[in-house]
Image (cartoon, rainbow, N blue to C red; front, side):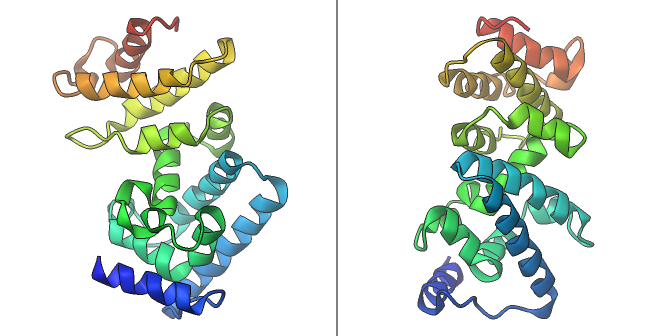
Length: 217
C-alpha cells in the first residue's frame, strides 16, 4: 500500500494536472476521459453515471488487446488506473482524497467495482444489460460486488440473480433490503450447495432463492 499512498499524495499535489504515465496508457486515459464527458453530459444522478460509464468502461476494456479476466482480477491494475491514469475521474465522482475508492479497499475501488458490476450482470449485450440494471441504485453495486463466496463469483448465478431481480422490480416497488437478503442467502447456500448441480441448473437455483424470500418468479 506504500506505493499507492505515495501515488495518492502525488496526485493531490499535482492536481489538477495528471500524473505522468507510460505511453501505452495515453490512449486509454484519453478514451476514458471522453467517455466520462459524454456520460456526464447526459446524466447527473450518481447511479446513472455509474451505470452508463460502467457499461462503456466494460465494453471498451474488453476490446483492448491484452485485457482479460486475469487482469480484471488484479487489484493493482485497478489501483494504477485510479491513481495514475484517470485520478481526475475518480475525484470527480468521489472527491480527491477518498482513499477507499482509489485504492484502500479493493472491492470499493470505483473503476474495479463498475467493471465487475457490469461483468456479473452482463446479459449478452449493452442494451439488455442496461435494461435490467436501470432501476437499481448504488446499493446494488455494493452488495453485488462485495459478496463473493469462498470460491469466488458463480458467474451464471449472479447474472441470473440480476435478471430475476429486475423482473421483480417491474412487478412492484421493491424493498431495498430484498437485494441484500438475496445476496446473503445465496452466499450462505453456496457454501453447501453447488448451484450448477441443482435440478434445472443455476437458473432454477436462483429462482428457488427468490421463492424462499416470498417473491413470485
